[in-house]
Amino acid sequence: KILNSTIIDINFPPVLYKKLLGMPTTLADFAKVHPTQGNTLRQLLAYNEPDFEDVMCLNFSVTRDFFGEVEEIDLTPGGRDMFVTLDNKQQYTRDYIDYYLNQSMEKQYKAFAAGFLLVCGGEVFKSFHPEELMHMVSGMHDFNFNDLEQITEYKNGYSPEHPVIRLFWEVVKEMELDMKKRFLFFLTGSDRIPIHGIHSIKIIIQKVKDNSRLPVAHTCFNLLDLPPYPNESMMRNKLLLAIQNTEGFGLV
Image (cartoon, rainbow, N blue to C red; front, side):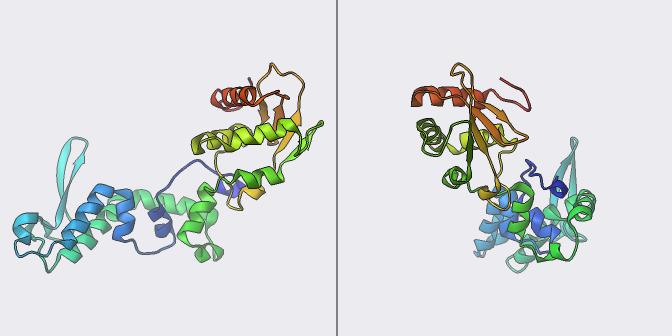
C-alpha cells in the first residue's frame, strides 16, 4: 500500500505511469507492452516501396476475440473501408496505438486511475517523472549489498569484523540476483528496494548459539538470528535452505 509506505509486489508497465501523469503515449511505450505488434508497426513505418498496399493489405480496423466471438473494430469511423497507404500509415499507427493503450481499456483504466489518484493525487504528484512514480510504487532495483553491509547493525557478540559475519556477507554477495531478492524477502518481507534506496533498510544480525538450527528472520523487525556456522559451506547450505523454504510468516 503506497499510503502506508509499503512496497507492493506489482509490476505495472511503464506506460501506465505516463497515462497517470497525463503524458502522451508513443510507439516505444506500446512496444514495451506488446513487443511483437510494436515490431510489426516499426516495419510498416519503415517500408516505403510502391507495392505497400499490396504487401501490407491493411485497413483501419482491428479484430478482437471476445470470449470466442471475433469482432472487427474500426480504429476510426468507417475504418474497415479505409486502406492503409503510404500517405496515411503514420495516422494508422497512431490510431492503432491509441486503441490498444487507451480506447480498449478506457472503462477499467478510469476506475483504476480514480482509486490511484485518490491516494496519490495532488499538486506534488504532477511533479513526478514516470520512472520516479514507478519506483515509488514498485521500489528500486539497485541491489547493492555492499551498501546494505555498511549499514547493518550487530548484536550478541557479532561485529563487522567477526569471522562468521565475514562468511555471511561473502555468501550473500555471491548469490545470483534472483536469490538476493529471495534473501531480501526472507529478511524483510519484501523483495524490493524502497524508493529512498537500500540505505533505508535497517537490518540487525544477532548471534544465536545452536549451529544445528537454520537462520531465522523476524521480518517485523528486519532481524536475523544467525548461528555461528564454522565454515563457508555450512553457512551457504543453511542460509539457502532457510531462504528457499520460507513462506509468509512461517518459522523453520
